Length: 420
Image (cartoon, rainbow, N blue to C red; front, side, top):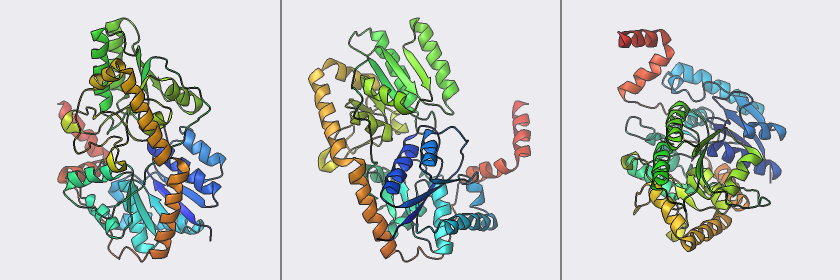
């Protein structure tokens, strides 16, 4: 089989997020199996990412495009044309056969690049966020879906988007996140609850978890873990630090620990030593691979980001790692934590179910063999997405926000008037 050259167009390769880990591990497997890959990403600062360092160590070409996550250029057709030419130059330099994108804004650039230059492309959606009524991003998914080029991490994730938008995406092809873990590390229980996340939009569950852990400590139940450890960084950091400091002062001890940015073996040890994991996405699946009972954190604002229970295999291989299931019971995190602590047999059953599911369904080798078949299918079947660019339409206030970013002086005037 001819060597396939793949370009990954992704929002960033930075931090400790699940998407970054996913892209890096996928690329390394492909390289090991005689594919050639490059990364085109935006919003990155040198030296902040263990995943980028890993890719560089393995001689993976990386292009840092600072405008790649900026929708302002998309609504200006002349600017868009310039950006597409810039991307095409990279594509030609590397003889790229197929593009994979995994986020909406950079996916729009990829889509329009394919429209202009007829390059095969797929969209692999890693997050359900961004499809609210204030945008028409669902139109992009519909275009990919029509051509059998829209992928998601699971049927439940796709269903969530369908429910949010009222659209049917029946051609969605579901391939789960591949999970890797260090099976030489000893599994222990050091009596702490762990969560790992970017302190950013979509992770508002962190605030609920902090308050629910406080409630557990106030109950003085001796069976609950002694500490809550939060790993991560981001825009919510200041707000989280303030609340954690207040709670620790209230209890006259550090019951909530902010670890900041943690990677590598230190992070793997935290997974292997926690009593319970709370989170979503790749981090949740990774914790399950370390034989930990995992409580699903949700993105559901309507239910105050409460949990829907434990990660486990549902009927027909369904599962959730952050999206509500059809019959989900929303409960507080302290409810689900206490239930695990009170019933050891129940806890063991949850661990056995989730670990067995990870081994069967999420192993890197089995997932990547499915991707190999998809790449071959797309390259043999691809016959162009058409000739019409996708230029997103926004609600008025989003247009205003986009243009204000261009004109910083107007922002300063508005802030000055607000203060007056």
